[in-house]
Image (tube, rainbow, N blue to C red; front, side, top):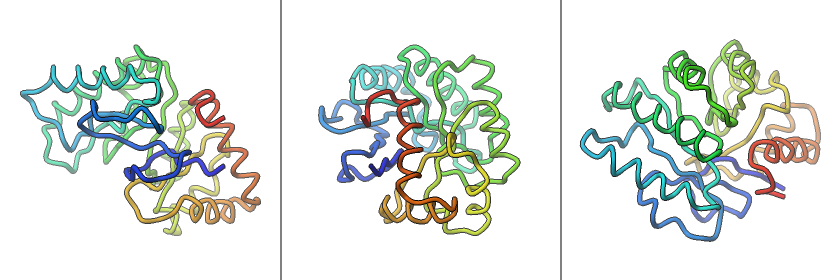
Length: 215
């Protein structure tokens, strides 16, 4: 089983979590989805509308995660507005008992602080990870997960990936043209294990985080 933890391509295979950023009421009854308020697309005058629409989405049994959501210091969205929405989504994740998929750009200290401050009680996945070994260890020390995608093609990220314990890893295609099977081949080579062993480990991680969704 090739589990794809995060994609923006709705045509991807059945073992993929398709991320929805808006129009939550149009999420189909078939397939597996995550829904979140991305920091790139927030507006100050629509807080109640956005939150209520997200709540409606999270009631759906096939919306299995909150996100992607988080903080991004490189985008134009007001940073305090980002913090407000991220904090609200941490509350919703706890309320609905659904894991979080995190988007984070140059704000890891702040994201980790808010997760701790608000007593996050569900699993957390930092998607598209491409940072240092030290930061990776800091994140997994909190019990969180790292998801890797196209950046595995970079030697520095490949080195970090190779050092991370299997029980804290996921793979994703995000918005790239890569196929998830390609990523599994690359990842298994970096780990020095066969692809079946990697699939088994990621399936176990998915069971821990998402229950029987991928069973």
